[in-house]
Length: 378
Ligand code: NAD
Image 1 (tube, rainbow, N blue to C red):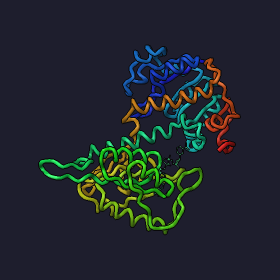
Image 2: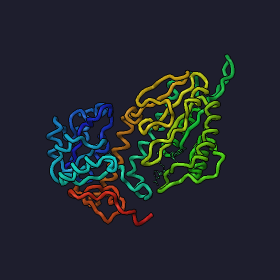
Image 3: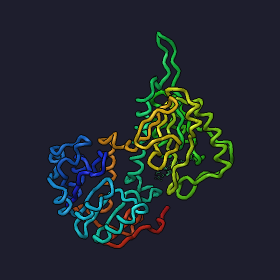
Image 4: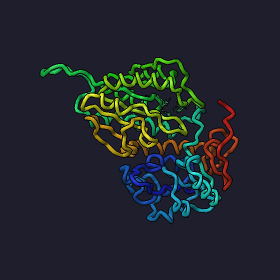
C-alpha cells in the first residue's frame, strides 16, 4: 500500500508526519511512501533526504491525497483536505473526535477509516510506543524550560565566581503530568532548585526521582479522576492550594504551569495578585494557554511583561522543536503501522479485536466507531 505524507497546512505548524529515517523503516514493512514536496522543510528535512530514503516526491497536495491508500498527518485535516482524501482511504493523525464532530461527519461521508492518535488507550502498557501525546508533552515541557531560561536574566545553576556567589534559580512547576515531569527534569539538570505540585499525590515520587521537591497542599483530598487524570477539586482544596501557590510565587524566580483537566477549562492557579508579588525579572511559562491558561494574566501565543514579570503563553512549543517532535511523532506512527501490518507485506489490517487498534480507530470504512468500549485488558 502507498503511504502519503502531505505538507501540514495549519498556520505555524512546522512538524511533518514522517521523517527520512522512518521512511526507510516503513519501506522495510513493505509499504511504498510518497511525500509532498516541501513537507519537511520547516523541520529541516529537505525533499532530497526523503528521496534518498526511498520516498517519491509529489508536487501537489491534490495528487498526493488522491493517490495515497493511507495518509499520515499531524493535525486533523481541513474540510478542503477531507475533500482531497480518496473515497475509502485511511487517515492517521490527531483528530480529537469529541471536539470535532463536523470533521468526523465529513470523514465518515468519505467512507474513510480513521485512526486518531489522540484516542490511543494510554493505560495499555503495549500502547506506550505509539503514545504521541506523551512524546509531544515531553517535548513541550523541555521547551518550556528553555523558553523560561531565555527570558530569565540570570543563570539557572548556582555559581561561585571571582565576582561573587550566585544563588541557583528557584523554579516552581504546577502540574506534574508528562509535560510537568519533563520540565522538572530539565530545570533540575540546568541546576535550578525545583519544586512542584500536583493534585494527584501519586506523582510525588516521580517528582523526587527527577530532582524536584514535591510541595503538598495542606488539605486532604484525593485528586485522581478517571483513567489516572485529574478532577476538579473542591472549593476548600482550591483555597488551601491558592495559599500555598501564593507563597511559592513570592519565593520563585520561574513558574511553569502545566495543569489540565480533561474536557474542562484549565484551572486558574496563578492569580494577578500572585504575579504582582513575584520579583521583577521573574518568568512564568503557561503551558495551559491554549485551554484558557493557568495564570489569570496569560495571553495565548504571546510573551507579555506584566508587573515586571514575563508571562509566556506560546501554544506552539512542539513546533519550536520541529525536528525533534517530527522524529518522535513519525516513530509513534511507525509503531502504529507495525501493529496494523504484522504480516510485514505493506498491507494493513485494522483489527478491531486488538484493544490498542480498537481505541485508535474512530471511523471504520465510513462507520463512526468512537467512543470505543473500555479496553478489556488493563
Ligand atoms: P494532563 O496534561 O491532562 O495534566 C497535566 C497535569 O496537571 C496532571 O498531572 C494533573 O494531575 C495536573 N493537574 C490538574 N489540575 C491540577 C491542579 N488544579 N493543580 C495542580 N495540578 C493539576 O496529563 P498528562 O500529562 O497527559 O497525563 C496525566 C495522566 O495520564 C497521568 O496519570 C499519567 O500517568 C497518565 N498517562 C499514562 C500513560 C500510560 O499509562 N502509558 C501515558 C501517559 C500518561
